[in-house]
Amino acid sequence: MRIAVVIASDAGAQLAGKIRQELGKEVRVFSVGRRENCEQIDSIAGFTGIHFHEYDAFVFIGAMGICVRAIAPCLKTKYADPAVVNIDAAGQFVVSVLSGHVGGANKLTRRLAGLLGADPVVTTQSDVTGLWALDLLAGEYGWKTEHCGPMNRYIASFVNGCPTALLLDIKDRGTEFLERSRPEHV
Image 1 (cartoon, helix red, strand yellow):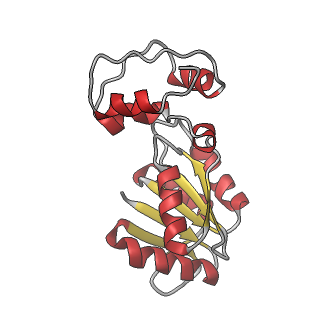
Image 2 (cartoon, one colour):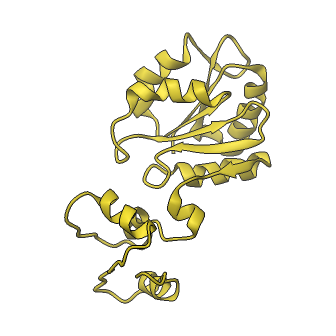
């Protein structure tokens, strides 16, 4: 996973250093202003606008508002956008901002929080309610999905407890998991 870490402060540089030390060559650190072991950029928004779809993930260290303003003009779809994570400059909270499931931001959030000793903040409804992440099931178990229409419609119905039918024509460890952990509305 190619990760761009974007910082604007010395505190951010320290956290970015820990991340790079642990994740190694996956990480490139970009900084507004000259800082040791960072590639200098002119502006966070400018850099993000040019390079947003060149990385698998963006990790912003600093205020959430800077992160949101930088990514807003770049957004396309959850199937094309990279994972976006924001870490406060004190390293207390690691927040999954964008592409939580499909882009891997939720997984990266938990990984970085563990690495930094921070609290992960994941707000995806299926995650906070302990439901399956329908958009990840096929990938986790090597299945092919067949559905009519936008997947988001099905996901919304599922996480809101609507009666849901899940048709599987295979018996493997994935179907065994689903049968064991089936919510009442499925």
